Image (tube, rainbow, N blue to C red; front, side, top):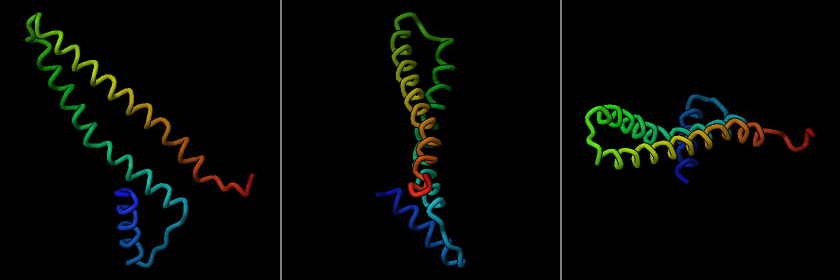
Length: 102
């Protein structure tokens, strides 16, 4: 429930200034908080790519298999993140639709 707690804290800060939130804003805030959780993973992948770039030029033949494993893991991680992030706009649109309008 970390995401919900974070959104509730944001709502508290907004209401201190007399602002109110809409259901669409709640949806946005939840998705935004979930997306923010990907930042550390993306920073890790960026570091991993920088390491691979630096090492690829100095590797010996026997070390190449370890590097290929690291490349494969990084590729799988990026693929999963891309799959999740491309589903986000669709999920957001679907969840903000008013079922009574159709």
